[in-house]
Amino acid sequence: MRSSSITRSLVSLTIAAGIAASGPAGAAFATPAPADRQTAGAQAGARLTTVENLGLNASQAEYLEDWLARYWGYPGEINGLLDTESWKALQRFLQAKWGYSGPIDGAVSTETIKALQRRLKAEESYHGPIDGIAGPSTREAFKRFATPKD
Image 1: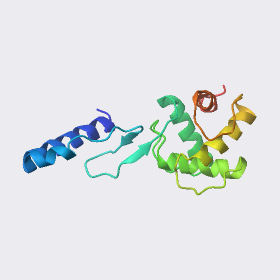
Image 2 (image 1 turned 90 degrees about the vertical axis):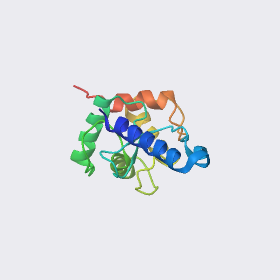
Image 3 (image 1 turned 30 degrees about the vertical axis):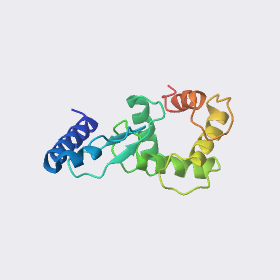
Image 4 (image 1 turned 60 degrees about the horizontal axis):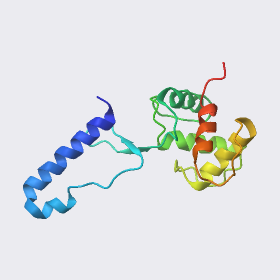
């Protein structure tokens, strides 16, 4: 069972217990808001981490994590989930080489995407604008970036 499935199961059980304990008043809090991103947590009580793979499959994300670990200080597990630590390492790369000037905070922000687009335009046949929007063209070029060049 994947950690995100465990997390969803634990959240569901917690919600059910809360509803049972609080009666009808608790029902207003029973439906979580939909999420645009995955969350991963290894065990109950673990800090949840936002994951944003920008369209990469697990093997592409693992390849990128391995590269980030070797060259840009990524300290995490090579698991195919681009989390906050993965993005911090990618921001260090983008800061050193591609004009990223924002904080090294792991946020997949407009400024992070703009710097990534500059890199993708230079070396991965990205032909779109440098607009900070991770649209289909950006995602396709990011996939090329995260695919081994053997």
